[in-house]
Amino acid sequence: MKGKIAIVTGGARDIGRQASLKLSAAGAKVCVNYFGNKEQADETIKMIKDAGGEAIAVYGDMTKSADVTAVVAACIAAYGNVIHTLVNVAGGLMGRKPLAELDEEFWDAVMDVNLKSVYLVTRAVVPHMTEGGTIVNFSSQAARDGGGGGASAYAAAKGAVLTFTRGMAKELGPKGIRVNCISPGMINTTFHNTFTKAEIRTNVANSTPLRREGRAEEVGDLVLYLAGDSSSFINGESVEINGGTYFV
Image 1 (spheres, rainbow, N blue to C red):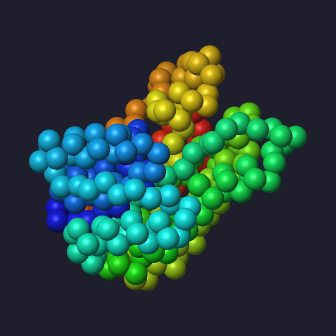
Image 2: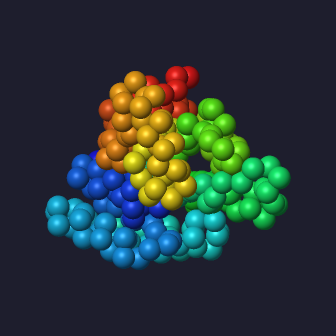
């Protein structure tokens, strides 16, 4: 990744932070997008710079076209007109609601943050990609198994990300741009600290063949692999990272 430019949406914490750190350690200059917490973004940038890397933090709501345009413009202004790698991490469960409580506003919000964001950022970045460009999206094990209780909207959105990934792989492949996605299972992150009960996490970990949750840095390593030349003939794939909990 030496000399390459990468944008990581939702790149300030947890999996996004690890993706940013791994790409930077491999030589990329990283544009770390954040929305909710500037302190986390600043901390991520400090970690990258302390390790000898280059990075900038760029605020933006990836569900808003104007913000997406501004983030891409900031990255180009800092590092040049070619973007080599895009990692679409931004997304989230937002809450657990069964169908009876699943109001239209909540449904739209979940779709926007998980699916529309991927579409908007991809559309904005691809004109700045050349042959050899890579896009790594984030689906979820929920896209395969429907998710846990109250997560049907999230599971549906992540299923759409997987399908969008394959559509883009076919469309952009002839231009030499690869598009893949990662589908994590239970990873130890703020996501599950917020939305998943401790006893459920323990039960899932104990039922996983490896008998533990995954770590964000392990997902970051997978991002780096899919973003780099080592995966040069992998395109349109969803890579499951769940410790053996679910097989495709």
